[in-house]
Image (cartoon, rainbow over all chains, first blue to last red; front, top):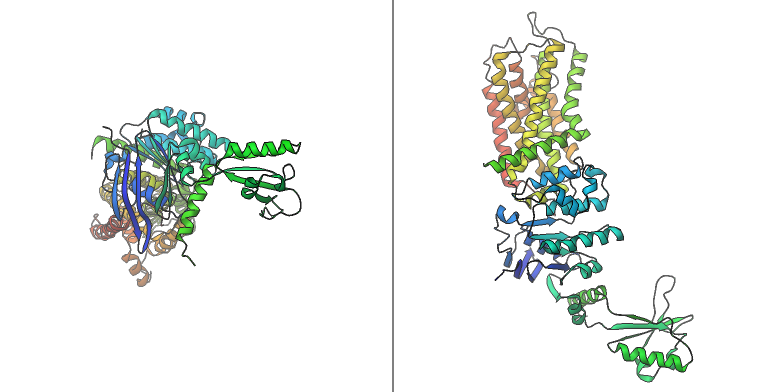
Length: 325
Length: 258
């Protein structure tokens, strides 16, 4: 039977009276990509640094590739790769020289040209690191993490500061690691990144895992509904059947300062219904429009995104943290 | 130590040397500046005979400037590079790889020794060819021992000093604050004479730079009646080196402050 790549139970880390990590459980299978999400200060980096062996824990059981990172030796380090949130390779070396230097740190490195090709830097091998763009430097960061041929890769916000094209390219690259059988623990603030890359997601807030599973599992946990909206001029509130009228909220168009209000005001308003009964609601809405001999060109049906789910989950934790008045 | 570690050390040294060479500021302060000082000192003070029977005044400047090169190549360069690597998380990343810490740091130390050897030979040759400085073959073994001890001591102190430097921008000013005044009281620019105030030489005697400079002077002084083996200077330097090494093993930081 294959052992899990990461197995964490009851992880605690305290700094004096402050408990940064308060009982985290994590489980990762080999070859899996797990997105680890959470607001700043939620204990995300502390947890990852404990897994990387950079920090000692206060309590709990941690096994990474079958070993305890707190006591693991250099042979364990041969099997992991790390991309830190911020790091800056030496700017006076060329791309190839930097990778050659890092390859020497590992007993069985990947060939340098293969690594450069993998991260899309083959055409820049003789360029000085100081002259690379931000995105290219990040690729080099990834190259340095991959050159040791790791079984497990820690990626801490790998695409922060990327333009949309560079981000898509980075995703394709990370997705390609799947074919190499690399297990990836991905920390990110971009929900689309997590949605695109991760097999599973774990959300941490206030030092505890508040949700885990696939994006769909999380949406269910957050019990968010699909949002149906349309322009009130096409189908006014008064024309709706009773049961829909009760569920609909009037949302004034975003004003100059981007403010919204739920009271009907001057100008075109948007009507919104949040519901699980998407088909029935849309059918009633269309029937009403037909009865009015009109149309609902502005109709928008939006399923909750991972971002909505995440924000809902995290805000639940926030309000639970607030002392009640 | 095994073959793998030696191979790693060779690779690390190669790239650390390339990095020093390509970094304009680092190569200026370790290689060019000592050369400029040698030329400026001889231009300012001339190159007359120190006594009626010799030697030339430049034979006092050459060992002083070699001492300067040793301190710049080991203490100053090692501290600046290490603080920079710590603050830009390069050290943290390296800690996340299987390379042994001493092998990684060994690259910088070996680079310091390469520069020290280069500068000592260059200064001695310029002194001999341009300024009539006598090269004393019988003191060469003692000169080599002084350079080996000096390199090790100032590398250890450079690493120890990184604990006092909060971030990479304060590295160079902090280091200059320490070494510049010490150079003046340590026989580096101008050797002490009988007229030098006692307080100055006393301050210089506490710190290791003067002991390095004095030990090197002994190797370039054909008229010295002292032993060619400056054991006391070596011992004082070694004491500083041991203190530095203890600080490194106890307090060296691989990561930026939280």
